[in-house]
Image (cartoon, rainbow, N blue to C red; front, side):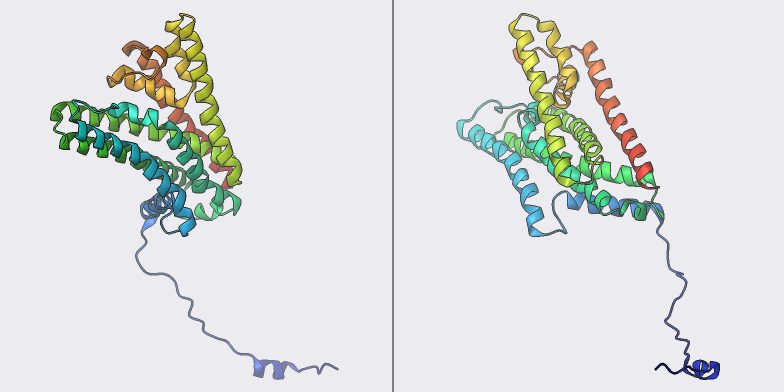
Length: 301
């Protein structure tokens, strides 16, 4: 049977504990610091740094796969005293586009899907980060990660070319053109990968969707270009390249960077046609950014 206590007895047993809550009077680092922190953590996460050993395996394997052909090419060039590299700097990423696509498919969902799945996005936006800060940090982090994985093999080729005593001016020009090409590719692929991944909180679905979009679009465009070239419609080949991300980049570098086109028959867009390709690439990048902003404004509510 419970014993009823009088108010005096309750008051005698009550205690007020000072548990030390105080207002924060230290330095407030603000939005810029939060944005930089989100960028650096997302960039590290794209290579599995700061995560489990299992998370590091695939990114590091893909980096090795990207660099291995470049190292082999350099060894062959040095051993045979060849007068040029087997592959142009601007064409290396085109040749290795399957590996790049796999990297995007594996890391774009990792960058955004977990935040959606565990509903932590509203916590980011509570303060001081805003929607634009989150989107820019994630976009910049994935683009930077892609630039690293595509630029490092070019550095290997460039250093090897200098060791093989190839012409310094030609190699430097080609190397810089290659860097411009992979920078554009990194921005485009990062935008596409993030937009697709931001649609679903399921990482597996995001991986499959990114692979499907990049692979199917490239396969369909390449097939149509081959058919057009075989039927003598060479003028249509460059325009078909507008419908795949990797062929878009190929068209831009062919028109403005002096690259040899990977299109069937080696027929790439002219400089005038290249303007349309460049506008298409920039429009896609801007469109991806806009779609991400719209998506995260809804998620953050």
